[in-house]
Image (tube, rainbow, N blue to C red; front, side, top):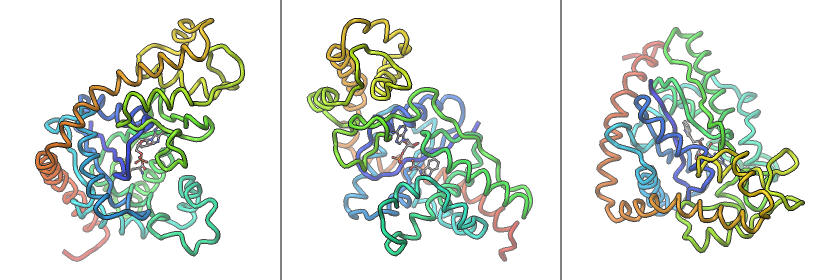
Length: 328
Ligand code: AMP
Ligand code: TRP
């Protein structure tokens, strides 16, 4: 089985990225060959400070490895190192429609509040087409992502089918793979919106690099629902979110946790939750610190990864070029 996914190097990773994506990436590397991409060309669809972008790219590589990615088993690489991503992105642009892209909810979210289209970049609009190229180049069977990316994977399937139909079988149609629990972690300060690094307050998220004190403080401040019992449910979005986090990290089911906290109240729950988060992140944080001290090793891993990725991407690209009639 071939697996492909990507994460943007646009700042800190948070618990939502970990539970919705990264944790699943690591688990999947034993089920087939995985390609994990650091999508720097996606990151620049919003303004980035050049030096910071370089730093974020290395730090995301360190985070993948710290979380358990084994560069012998999986291919870890930087999107812009494999030029075929941009090339296939362009070709897919010629079969994707404006209407299709206008329907993407992430684009609508990112541009809501912006008056007129004058300041919205073409790159931001076109983002899902580049993502389709990332995926289709590697002919993956599955694409593990958080729920917010599901619509983009559906568009990818649609574009692959359209291309195959028009020009002949070229791309495998990939399946989306969502986590059963944790596919959509909500903000700690607002359980009705997903946890996000672009949130206005750092109390929205727990960064994977937050220290123990910060984690305790953020969880203590997390909003809860009315009532006193630690229970999940449709009318308890905040508690459901916190219980989900605890459940995935502790491998205990939500009903088990509800039983454990029966009669104990929110303060006791938050205290244990903070301990669970701190303990779960500690090994990852230690490893991350070590890796960040060896940038040359990180760069070597990314170079090897790009080399392997390129050998697959060029093959797919050759077929695509041939099918559409580009002169050899
Ligand atoms: P990004 O940081 O936007 O590149 O996202 C990287 C991965 O994390 C993608 O697979 C997202 O679907 C996933 N992800 C981002 N935010 C969340 C969240 N709040 N809950 C679950 N998964 C998320
Ligand atoms: N758009 C994804 C996100 O923001 C990142 C991404 C880019 C991706 N290319 C991809 C995810 C290919 C999966 C496969 O999370």
